[in-house]
Length: 282
Figure (cartoon, rainbow, N blue to C red):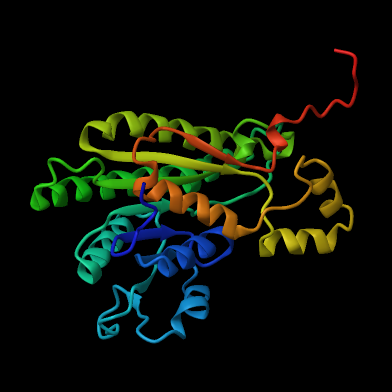
């Protein structure tokens, strides 16, 4: 069993903040070539651009150091041209792509009784369709490069990992739009896993609960009871670090999980197995 991803090339979306940022850094530290993609060019440059050899792809005239295993790419993945440019830039930089991590997602509230609320459409577009379209484009590249590599006897030619949420199964009314998009992403994971299995491409997901990201820290600062509420509702009694999600993604991207596909790995400290009704009478 090998957890090594050294020398492989990964695309990580949503890489400027939170969990996506932690995943990009973790995979790069593990020896992978990583293209960090996000809409926020300023934050990408802030997090990665000060490192030697960094450049914003696909802008011309900015050359990276030959030994750099990181690149940054700024763009709106809701645009088909951006997806094509991202893939092209990745191939130009590292010649191939072996891992895709769809970590770009938007979390937003919605009014389930407001017929004019467009948040369901917005989050389907942002959280589901970008992941689907990018997965389709990357899978085609993985298949073509496997033919070039003559990888007939290889057990896995690529891995796709989607980030979803326990909101796909456990929800609150104000999170209806996010829950719908998360559930759709999980079903997309299963469907693509079946479709791509004959091509030896594995598709899995990580569904997680509360993670101590910058946004959660800000929310806890605004609501003094929120941190205790989350901890009390989590059997393991704490909030996850972003690095713990990154480690799960690493496992799913490596050959250690070579016989796993179509699965949603839940990282939630036990929240989804807890009965919220505190009574012994059933």
